[in-house]
Length: 141
Image (tube, rainbow, N blue to C red; front, side):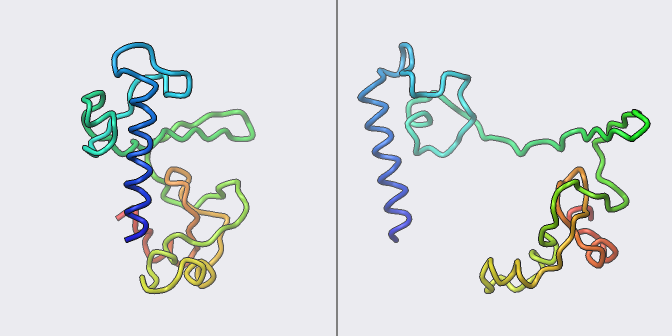
């Protein structure tokens, strides 16, 4: 519908703009990304169509979490936590409560119905309430 039309129109306008300012070989215009190409496999954008990029962007690996204790000791870990920890942020809705709700509900209703929590998995950076954590956090299964 309308959304797809707007996306396709935007892609075409970007392609036309790039073709007007760049020949595809020489120095890139100032407004264009100067770093290495980002992997893309959409077969729609200018860069895929003209062979500038190939492959797909892979999901980021879990980053190594460094915890600094009051005594100054540092602990680096790339595994998810066994215990819920304070994420050091203000409270937010429980992501697992949100995911477990009926898909037909609106986003606002799902957030309102979810429990609030400041704690969760430091590696996943998701707020998880105590009842969901005790039930078994779904991303750790």
